[in-house]
Length: 360
Image (cartoon, rainbow, N blue to C red; front, side):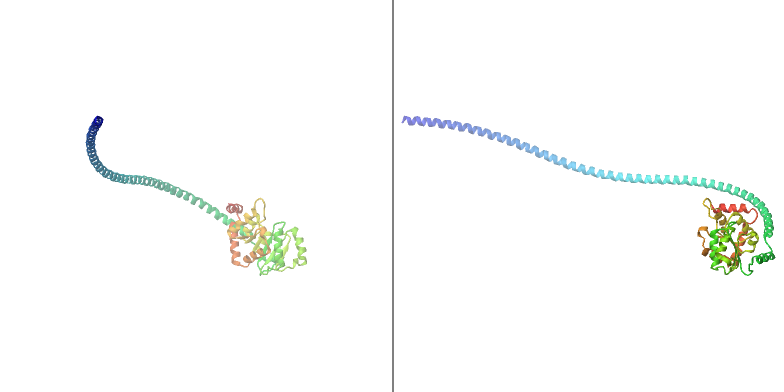
């Protein structure tokens, strides 16, 4: 029984200890609950603070957004003002440029007027000088006209001196056996003759192309026998043709002829201009300077002659040129008159001046 009591005591003691332990734990839990309540209170307070802060932040944010809106509106107004200022500035610059341009135009107009004024003064001086020069030129021309009048008188005397009478023409024609009813073409190539010219004339005669005109042909002494041999015994009986080795009375034969075919040396040009006859020139070619071609161009330019270059000469183109001139009396007369315009006094000087014009 005692054992059971001891046991119960022990159990009771254990229960008491257990109860004390539970009581301690309960106190501890109670304390923890108080701590938790304090913590909750603290958290609650902090949450309230956070809410207050959030409320303030939201208010600040709203205020800030309003301020930003206001600022943006101000910026837009500022930009508009800037644009207006820039437009006004551009307008002012345009006005300034316009004023500068007007100023420059005024200066240019002033300079132009000054220049025109100077030009008018210069033109006035020029006219005055030209007037004086014209007066002096007229005086010189008057002197020249006097000299030319005297020259024309001398020229007339010289031409009349070089012309031969109809009786003399008749006599020369009879001596040569030349007909009176056909025009005459005088052909010569210089004192020694000209082979190229002779070859062309020989074909014209052989083919009897000269039906409407007569030919007096000076072959040159050296070629006369060669041509005589080619034509054989017909040389003195050719149709409308008289062949001679050399012409001793050139001036007389030029006077009785209607057209000349020849070289274009300076002396020949002079003689042709004196007698006033149209010509077909075949200039003597030269490697250094084409003097004869230049001479021929003087009369060609006047309309008194035609030119066939030596290297281009054929019986065809020579016959064609002869036909075109010899069968047209009006052309013959006009060409002869034009040939005489550079004859006979100071003819060398006139030819030289004309040559200078051609060879420029």
